[in-house]
Image: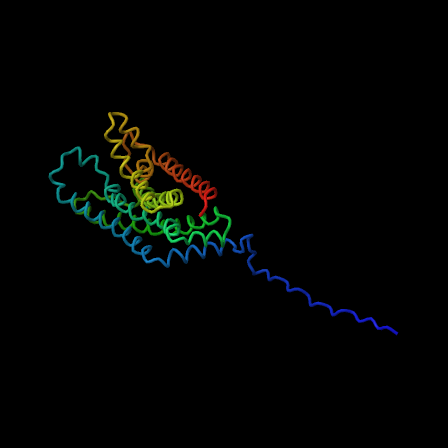
Length: 284
């Protein structure tokens, strides 16, 4: 008589917990990608030095310019006094601070190309646009917080000095809060432009040179054009468009704050789209 032995029943497979994040095709979820980019950004010492430099340049230059204006205030003519914009004067440190935050934006990605670490990033996350988006999100959030702190610090320091001549502005005055926030937005945008150029060019020196050309060299060249071309070109360049949002007293040949902001965001968007296209098509 033959006895049939049934095979042992396999145990039930484990049921995934609802709290377990669902991985993407790359094995990492969005939170994991963001956490990875945050770890890479904060572990580099130059990140913190550059952010501190942004704060120092913004607030320090504000104090210096405001003190210089107070010292020569009694020798100014009536026109200079009437057209003086205390808000913009205290925010002029963004002309220096943009260099620091822009360089950091470039280094966020160009350093990975230089060291070859970008290959590991793309192996861990084959969806390359997701890597770029995570870098932009993490860096943009940090840059925005630091830039806004620097902007408000510069404003209040500058107004405290200008109050010696009773020419200061209040944060509650029309357009002032928007301008102070706008200076921080402008700095953040310059940083994101640097990130996009770093992804496009993949070389630190080339990306930094391109960024400085956009925000520093092109405006100088535009000023050399005959009138009215000099004003018409200057106001639509990235610097002129972005800084229009940080002004309270608008000149007749300048863009309106919201038009300038829209154009500035357009520059960032075009750079980001081009970066995604090139990163997808080229080898790491």
